Amino acid sequence: MADTVFGKIVRGEIPCHRVYEDDKVLAFLDINPVSHGHTLVVPKEPAETLDRLSDESAAALGRVLPRLCRAVVAVTGVKEYNVLENNGTGAHQAIAHVHFHIIPSPTAAKDSASAGRSRLSSPKREPPRCEDCRRGVLKPPRGKSVPRTARP
Image 1: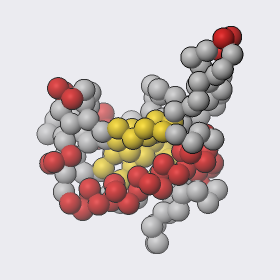
Image 2: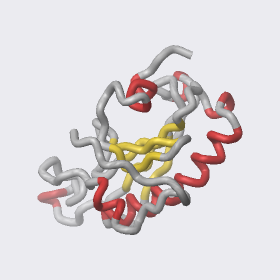
Image 3: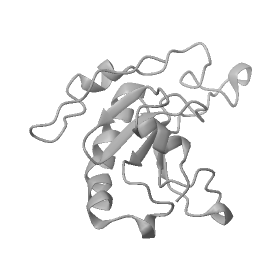
């Protein structure tokens, strides 16, 4: 597998705004978010597609994804969200490293002045901070700690 931007982020060669980390999984805010709180969840194991990922890493993703979804809901205030994962370029996978998107789906504004935009997707709004997630929403597995956030 070729080295990817996610591999460099996992190794700490490229900074990111970390939301969660354990020995198998890293979650961080997307630098080109579709909406406020758009989070990427990647296994630390390099695998291009989900079918090439080890059972251990897949299980770790399965344990962490619901917790991260709850954190995104709590921090952004949205009730609906998408969890997306693409496998291969024909399926619109842009980076050849397994990754899940948690994308909050804010309710569309009702008035015509802000139609198509919501209060959560405003470019003036700050992204959620790791501290927001640490306020009891995200609890790492026993014996693990959530690291300090890497500031963008």
